[in-house]
Length: 90
Image 1 (cartoon, rainbow, N blue to C red):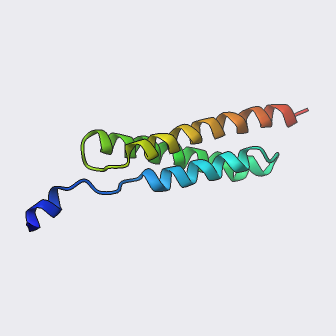
Image 2 (image 1 turned 30 degrees about the vertical axis):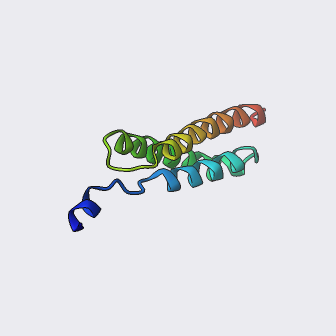
């Protein structure tokens, strides 16, 4: 039975990706703060999300949906930061 525990998929990067994506999206709507908090958090969320999703696709993790959601939230947050930055420059 010990062999079964080793082959079972485990939690991957879905939780950290989702947390970072939500954090990035919340701070993305705050002018000036978003550039320093949300932009780096968005990059981290995208990286964690898509690495976690890839690991889930390979069967190494069981939280691919959360990882993909975190990555997409990070991408949306990055776009919001970009547009808020454009709107406040002027």
